[in-house]
Length: 403
Image (tube, rainbow, N blue to C red; front, side):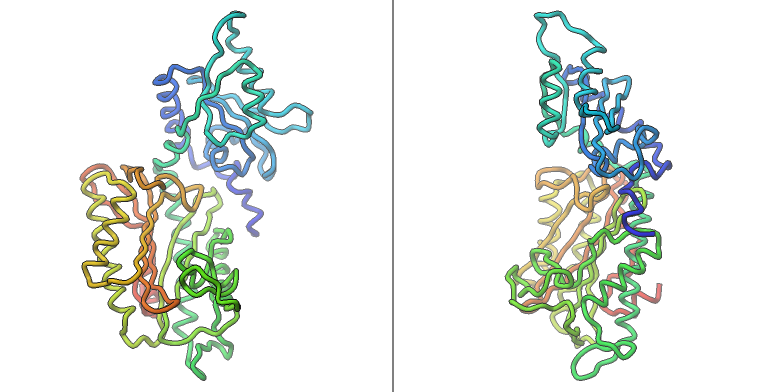
């Protein structure tokens, strides 16, 4: 099964029944609060918002037609959908006419207002305005997506399990590696970033998910993957060379990052740092600090809702408390139909039923980082926030194989 066969989750999965009632409830509330006629979204079948609506629209979308334009509306009671069907009419134009005909206004009446995402295509907005509607921006769809239903959490957990299978495959290769002329060798061939990335991706596919181009080895501080785009100095600047085929060395941290997508379109997100033949240097101290920071973040999110900024600051504070005074990076974001989605901005809260990716990194040497990322599901207030099952955070490759 190739990555293209997944159709990005457009109508392929019928086990997301809980999404529809949740989405309708959130959107209906927004319509009532703002006293508007309807909510409208327009995008291709690959658009995350369109894909999110598939639990309601799946019988009306054409699976596999990723470039089809889909226009969808909800008036508080009923969903209307139009898709590309080979006619000259744009789906948004047809949908706008249908909405207008559902509630004709008097000739001198004020235009009716509809809610749309801020990023709705310009041509779609023009069709809606031409039909007599005023447009008002809303983030209601993103808010709905941020809260994960039980069905969605299962899909995310499955993608995360596939990520773990991929990381363990790379760990097995490193556990079997020997040292020859200062480089890592396995089965008579050098261990390179490309070889590790290929191993991770192959295992993810075998586990029933899709790498989605998100697997990287030794990303720099800007997350530029050395295994895909060539070398970097670890500070966001290029070294001018390429490293994807350069043998990896013992005693140096090897960062593996992956965010596979499952058949329903939901992502995982996992980062591990492994060291072969470690001498117990800076990476060991950094590892203790980072793993403690993850425990602190879970306790913080168990206590109540916190902003993305607060969680990122707590991660860094815990790392600093262990004496790390060099470069430290922390990132917190939601995960779902996108590998990074709301809550994303600093002021947005991590609330009950959110699933977030927590990541922390410490620079242990020039061009070398220790990075760890896991997914955490926040429960209701007082309910323990819990990390989704994943391989050990150990630096030792063999430890990931003992579970």
